[in-house]
Length: 141
Image (cartoon, rainbow, N blue to C red):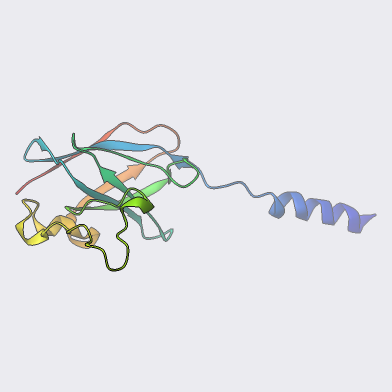
């Protein structure tokens, strides 16, 4: 009888662990007060070993959602912005032998290079459980 009780306790304690709390992430990326019209935003949580990217739309807005649509794991994130647009679907991936879509020339980008990497951007975001207020990143040249 003791074995059955211990087994049930262990299964309910460890076998049914809930997923970590998550929060929604939306916002806007500006460059000197003007919406960034294209790019990719990267959120990295180094301690948890998780990262998520999202497309920056023509109005500078972005929304990040995991594959389950649940947002990011709660915690502190380092953020980077790339002028490169994300591919949105498999239809946009060029076939072998076809002319691929030409990538943006990051050297000609108006976005300073320091924002390309989380280690140099200086951008951070604290994600709390549930709905978070929209985040505004106003980058400077």
